[in-house]
Length: 395
Image (cartoon, rainbow, N blue to C red):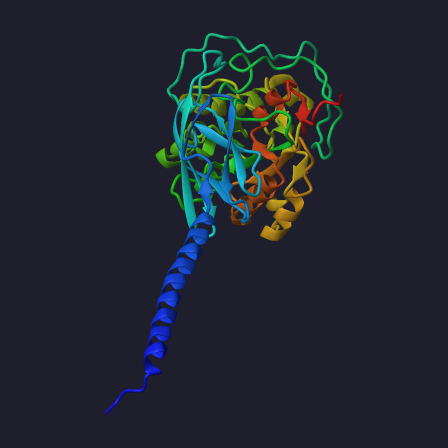
């Protein structure tokens, strides 16, 4: 049978169309793949070197999604600062290695950081992370008031005026020797977190360790005021030691929960000295801030306790059966330089701490210890006087 002649051109056309389709299909598909690859998030640097006290910035490109920044390794060596949508500053704290992670949705990107010690970096005090063994300290505290301070035997309920008197000396001579402000930007707003009534133990599920872990995760510090009689087991001693090693401040909250304001000088001195001795044995430090039980202070206390009295600018009210939501709302009222009162024994406080740290981090405020707050702002604490806050100096 004779084939129709028009079938040949039709077949050729069909074949040509198929070839075009395949060719352009592959071309278009390859172009799409290339465009998709170019949109994948990438770090501006996968490895950086930064000196102690200096800052380097890394970015995620393209900057079309919000990045969650965190330190996955070497938190004692670096701190993150000036966090933005797709960039972060990395400040060197201590020579060593660290890893910064950028989470963009499900994508995880890592930057290896090497921190080098600078020749000009001078350490003014022993660092807790270096050693917590008792050290020889022959310095005599020089923070004794030159004249008898004034006050009333009633509990202090409202912020006092700017303290006047004999200032505490520099770290290592009168203040907490573990103070390190190399990671703090003094030009940024900051608040001091404080936690009373510990220790409660050292298991990772205990209140105190949950708070410790949250602080480390957010590159934040705090002051923990400990009850001497509560440090009655190896687990509780270990909590105090771990606090010092993490760079948190250890403070004196008396030997037990009894208000000292109704006691005579001998009993007050015994309570403070016994607690100081325990804290010194564990940390190797000799000078500790003091917070009065129930915030009740008397003239006798001011005359015989040779330490600054730490009150608060903001009371979380966690001691008054406040809910987690109430605690968060109360603390969010804090102003730049406020000292915030909380208790590590309260479950609702433990639940509130991570959200509060997120809140201040998003505001680009720093969360520090009390001694760090005052030292970073170049202001002195005064023995025997109440301290509620440390606002920035007015120009």
